[in-house]
Length: 142
Image (tube, one colour):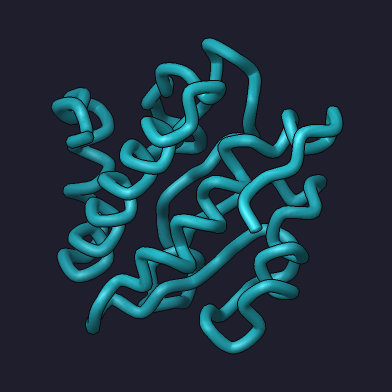
């Protein structure tokens, strides 16, 4: 599946980022929509802004936790941000300890150059998009 057209306000948010970070996060956006499409229980995503950053919500089904795309202050890496009250980043760190850089319990950081680690990142995004289902007893990707 290809991602839908960018809403105007979300497009402006991507455009406000330094070009290498914006480009990397647009690749992540594509992967978010592809990952959601692979999970029927996720449903249609809501793409909006939260705190001025592109955010992806499972409003239709409530299956997952919000995913935000942006940049951490002082970092030149792309950031995928998650609710810090979830166990998501801890789970990512446990599964892929050396694949990504992490910030506390809220962010997974990606370098802006090089190949996007789609397989590993897809697992992380899948876990986020199905987080509430997993907590109700259905298990996510292994």
